[in-house]
Amino acid sequence: MSSPSRTLIVQKYGGTSVDGPARIRAVAEHVVRTRQEGHDVVVVVSAMGKTTDELIQLAEELSAFPPAREMDMLVTAGERISMSLLCIAIAELGLTATSFTGSQAGILTDTAHGKAKILEIRADRLRDALADGQIAVVAGFQGMSTDRNITTLGRGGSDTTAVALAAALGAESCEIYTDVAGVFSADPRIVPNARLQPQLSFDEVLEMAATGGRVLALRSVEFARNYGVTLHVRSAFTWEPGTWVGQEEAMEKAIISAITHDTSEAKVTMLGVPDRPGIAARLFRALADEAVNVDMIEQNVSVHGLADISFTVPKADLLVAARVSEEVGTEMGASSVSCDADIARVSLVGAGMKTHPGIAATMFEVLAANGVNIEMISTSSIRISCVMREDRMVDAVRALHTAFELDQEPVP
Ligand code: ADP
Ligand code: ASP
Ligand code: MG
Image 1: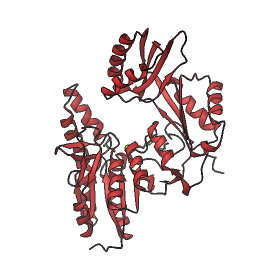
Image 2: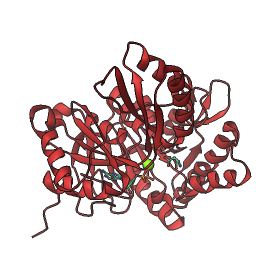
Image 3: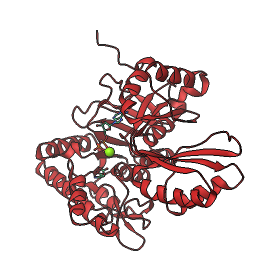
């Protein structure tokens, strides 16, 4: 039986971390180790390796427009495979682990298939399993909707399952095990000498996740910040300590903590729009009504009463955005509407930016010195983003990483 004084740790394992029997055995051993150190453990697993992509591809071979409900039913199967295999591996090590689908774990969501939001967690079955001395293993990225269908939380959503369970169960911490050693100053696949960041604030990681820093799902960081769940992102290969993500007050503020990149968006430009009240409202209401997620927006100063408006949307929404913009543009008398999918956004993120003037100027100088033309700019108090040609992105990330002295010092 589990004693009431035991602390609870939620551990989440990503796809690469459970890719095959050897990896699953290594994870089972780590879970058992954690249990034997005296903690209660709830594990959240992703589908093995590229399973989710493969399942989506299978459906796409059958239909260009597969029904959303069936897609969710299909892809949640991936997590069911890994959760049961992990329980089998843990049993082999002599402990009892019980697997739960999202629905069995009491994760109640809204009805938006493919991007459902968690409404409530009724975690009684997990609590009972823990009280009975078991390890609970939960399938990531899924839940059951208010109309009793199986839903998914969006790609990368197992992170969100883990943080939401940590909040609901009052876990001491939420460990996110992945295929890199933690959160780095840039994607290590693009900047091989990126630096591991031992501590980051929720706000910094939120900006990173929102601007392409794939290591944590955006919604999971929102959950962590809203419910004060400390995150520890670390390697499922070395088991070494990685990056702690928590409240900003608790940490030293680096001026720049990361450079992120994103190629998932496209740009729509409307030229020669009459510059009068209500034009932007009309366009962006029409886009919102079609559920197009607009991100950056830029409007230039009007010349002879005509202005140009550019905005970015997810590439997946580009066709709809183009159609809506054409319709509204014609109605308003715009001279043209064009679309451009070959863009990338590169962003500088850092809490210390608030108190250090001149960061934007330096960023623009570095890009200029590398011959990168800036097409759009947007900022928050701790982020500066520039849109550029996609084929200049990697050079831009590397040049900024060096210029802001983020390159890891060589080991002496
Ligand atoms: P998992 O399957 O464990 O959830 P993901 O593929 O979703 O793993 O996220 C880990 C990947 O995120 C890494 O392999 C890395 O390439 C990528 N990544 C992008 N930006 C960063 C960053 N700043 N720090 C660490 N990893 C990053
Ligand atoms: N398996 C899902 C995906 O690939 C969820 C996750 O891994 O977090 O998106
Ligand atoms: Mg992930």
